[in-house]
Image 1 (cartoon, rainbow over the protein chains, first blue to last red):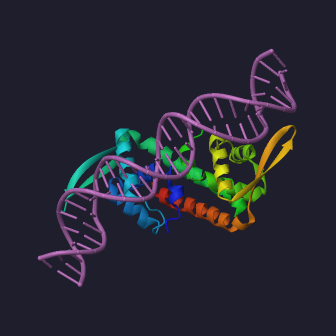
Image 2 (cartoon, helix red, strand yellow):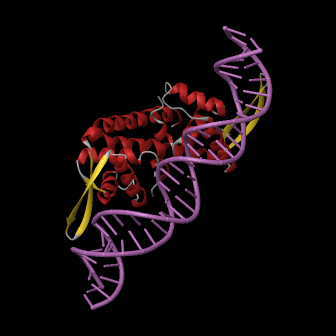
Image 3 (cartoon, each protein chain N blue to C red):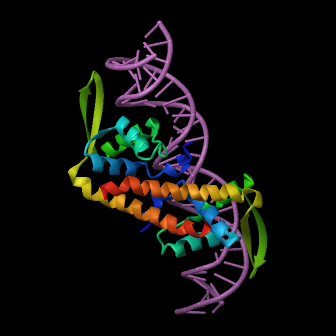
Length: 110
Length: 110
DNA sequence: AACCATACCTAAATTGTTTATGCATAAACA
DNA sequence: TGTTTATGCATAAACAATTTAGGTATGGTT
């Protein structure tokens, strides 16, 4: 289980941004469970990785957060700043293209 | 240029092993230039990354090296140990599957 | 002679992630 | 009613991988 752990590094930020772009607004815990659910437990984003990543993206000004109290628990929602939507698009596309390159590289040895 | 630098981390070992599996025997410098050429300069494996990676794979017993003198320059060829070919197959397949998962995750936001 | 491509290598610094915690609330359960 | 499970945030030490930046050396090109 979690065979993909080693491959995940480097893709975390882009996965976060892609999910944020798709859903508009998400909170950290939701990003983890969403990725997990969408990939049938194949992609496990750990909280220890995702929260620092979100904080860093916010510090860079790419995303912004807003707190909301829901059922007595606080949720911190993140969304992509409009000014950076294009950058995010590019980043997502670049990762997509990268995965295609990797597949082309690996295919001959499969 | 080299937009893929951040995505490369974590995939280096598997790329090396896939190329070695495909070509049978390769030397470090060749692995770098091969990846570069095959991807039209999109995947740049740096020597500072690849040599330590090769040494580590050898220390683990997954690959083995043999030196050869060619045109007055020494080349250190690496190949996958037979006993580990199955492990390598699995690893390559796992990365391939992972890239497919990533594509499925990213697609809705493209 | 200078320079570039080839070919190996290492090591400090940076970075990202894991692992291991901690706090707190709500709901389910026994 | 007390414990566990799920939710939801967070940080920090340790670890691992990679970058950056150097080093050595040979052969071929200008």
